[in-house]
Structures are given as structure tokens and as C-alpha cells.
Length: 267
Image (cartoon, rainbow, N blue to C red):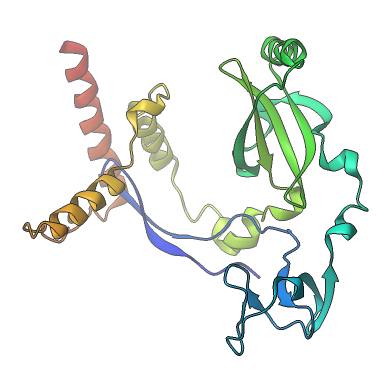
């Protein structure tokens, strides 16, 4: 069963506009705990310690973390229960393999963290950074963070070690699960492919993260400040008329980008 779309819009490059829907590509398998009243396992608000059904305040000693094993059946998990788990596993980044970073599709990456050496660990830390840098390899590891074991990628970046948590294979949905019959070629012609490749080539550049910024955030902040000061607000954005014929859109886009590249060279 594919997930429900969470957004719809278009992919735009040049004059080409592709309508798309956005669906989540991953599904977390993390065990989720509830904060309950240990007397009857009714849910409570963890911050205010108040029962959600009655609004009654609950004594902190009566708050328990519980896991719903099946509908209506809760299992309380005490701090000492977690202490029974493998302590070594919860305090180590256990490297399983060294692989090439190019072999890992970005879809598997979740969250990046810096790892910094503690006292006495500076030399082996630098040694690992150098070894990974010079071999072009990254470590595939397992690490427990906040009671969840993560797959992780340990890689060097600008002289430091970065640990990037990853999704397990079972957490990544396959494209066929969400595309279904839409995954076919749908009558794409060779001439259209060649024109699209030309457009991609004309818009190609070296990756420079400094070139990109969050323009939506900036505009939203400007709107908030303007509204706070009683200043006139910008007019609602109107989308430009779109070229419907795909081949025409590709051809005009290629011509525009070629002219833009030529003007840059002569500037």
C-alpha cells in the first residue's frame, strides 16, 4: 500500500514543468513508547504530567514509559529494564565494513553528527580520518542513540569525522511500490531524450553549497516583519503561463540556456 501524498506541485527547469506528487520514501521502524499512568496505562502529557482523559495531575512516580504490544495491551518499561541490554553496544560505534561512499545512494541517509575526540583519543582519531581520506572509504557501522539502533556511515569531512545515521533496507520503500504502472517509459521519444540531455548539460555546474539559500524563509521573514510594522504586503504570486508542448518547451529551454552560457563566456 503506497503512502498518501504529502505535497503536490511541479519540477521546473528551463521552460519544462513536470507535475508531481510527493510521497515519503522511507518508513521508520523505531519502537515508539507512550508515557502513561502506571495505574491504568492511560496516556499523559509528559511535560505537564496531566492525564489526557481527565486532566488530572499525575505524580511523577506514577508516570511510566510503556510499549503497546498490541491494541490495548501495554508493557511498562522501567529504566532498569534498559540496563539489561548490551551496554557495550549502547556506548560504541561498531564498524562492520568499509565501503566506497559512491556505492551508497543518498536516500539511505538520515541525520549528520560530528564526532570529536575526547582526551587521549586525538591521535587514533586523526589516524582514522587520514586512513578514510586516503583510501576513499567510509565505515558502515551500528550505533544506539536514544534507545534505537541505527545503521550509520562514518566518513571524513574537512578533517573531522561525521557520523551519518542511515535507514535500514527494510525502511526504504522501493520506487515500484509508489510508481506502480507509472514506472514505464510512457511513450518517451528518443528526440525528446536527446533534447532533455542537452538541457541538463547546459544547466550543469560544479556543486557549490554557498550558491543556494533558503529564499522561502527569507521572504516569509520579510512578510512577517512587514505585517508587524503595518507595511504594505506583497501581491499574491501568480504562476506564469506554462508551455504545454513538451518538445517545444525543451527546444526553447535549450536555446535560452545556450544563449546564457554564451553571454557568460563573452562577459
